[in-house]
Length: 124
Image (cartoon, rainbow, N blue to C red):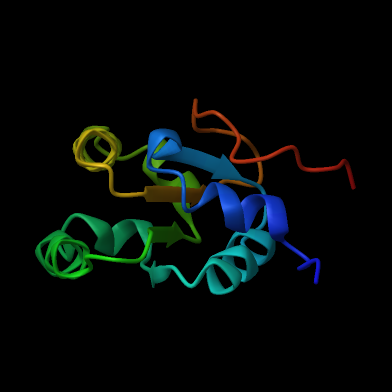
């Protein structure tokens, strides 16, 4: 049976594609994470740095599922310290090297963050 988010859900299981990506809306990435059976963590941009220890602990404890971090208000990082994005990119690189799928999905409706899109989002 074809799932609604089949391709993106499948992508979440591919450790080689781990990384930090942007989207305009959280709906599709959230649904795809559920379909993929991924560990989904949602955390606000302003809380990401202070809550990083708990996020790292959750990622480290997950051995079988893909990990997806969804940051609904990621555009706020455009003005903040870039260290948070670098921290996420470093985690993605380490997970990729270890063969563990990890996706940090930044919800950025205006495209203020210089990140690659997670998938092709239609206009409108």
